[in-house]
Length: 301
Length: 293
Image 1 (spheres, one colour):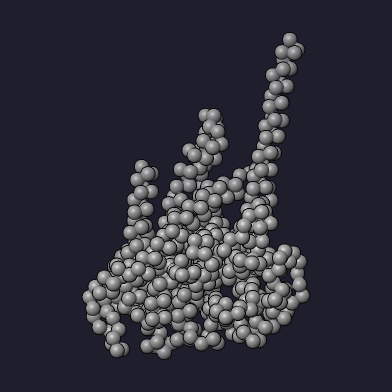
Image 2: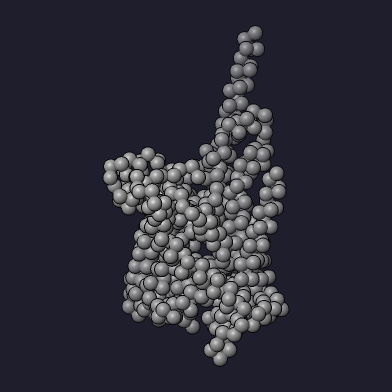
């Protein structure tokens, strides 16, 4: 801690108390709200995950919910869907975002201001709003996307009715929505790379591609690690888009862990099981992010 | 001799003009590439605007409309009169504004405490708050719902506002900016006899105005677009926020796309206005969502 501010002279006995009173007074509202609406619910959910509701009473059942979860085919489907959407969507979006950020960082680009607004429009839309928009755009017979496909001679795609394409519809919508957001993060990082590095590379005769490989990508590393981890965490918790776009269908093809939790909690009112799903999700998120950080950090060294 | 002298010069002139031409080509390619991408980004939005000007039966045509119809006001009227969207818009505006104002204030106060004071447990408390970011928000969904049932707060503003005030990102962001406020400034205010609270309010807060703006935008967006939690605690239509109202419009067996898409456009308008006026702060607010750098 570099800075400490001493209050004006106070009698010695009271000095310590009053020194702590000020920061705690500033902290009090946040602390109180955090304890009531975050810490308490998180712990209560842990308790709930070990209980089941029978005739209006919460009964303690030990690990029963978790055991049931381990052999629940629907949970496995939800996990599989979520992971599939994750491994297709995150790389496509992040690679596009990197190239976009590099393009925006180049002095060769014309019309930057106009383009920036275009790439920002999706970010401005809320999840439900763009989910609804895409449900209209992806209609089979008369949606805009299928019109565009058939006008360049491609067959129409059953976006929302086919198990595989429904997942791709979510991939498409997610990428459209978040690509600009990630590009902004990369752009901020790119602007922190000193131009001398590029000049030195050019003097050494490095081609543009070599400069990209050896200067740009290493410079982007912190932002890359961050966006990979954040996008993964976000996608694992996917709820709004499948809820609005496909409602988990067709035939559970877009059921995500978040949706399965919601269904158990608020359609079957099985709070204990829903809480167990919540903690399983927490565990998965924690595990995946730790593994990612370990891999990404090891490659750095 | 003359020839020998002029040759290299001419060669270099040729090289620069060649270089310039290559630059121009490259610039052209790059711009076209980015423009195509921008088109993909913006066409859905333009389609939305055009779609809201047609009645439901005429929205989906092959080929699609390329110009506006004249049904926008009717769609808007349907939306507000028979679908109760006015309530939703009012609820969202009130909840998002109140949340933002209070949250920015208390997150700043907490950030100030973390940045400028030492007290027992400071680091532990901060780490716990930040670590809570790693928890999926769905974990607290059931307990918060039960809590609101017990408190009798279903369908109320407090149920939406109170759990969204102590925002870890906000606290982190404000702590970062507070630590750049010079200690001398704070000391000087105290020497002049200002109390702790007045120092914070009148000296410290004004110096971190850009961070306040970024934080406000981040919080407003989060609350304006929040969906799952409001979906759970709002059980009657007149209590719906905009995203919940939109989703419920879609739930109707035969969707009235005219009203639904108009509602979608209305829901993004406040954010769009915010963005156009505060572009710089908006970017900062977005980057605030990706802290840690």
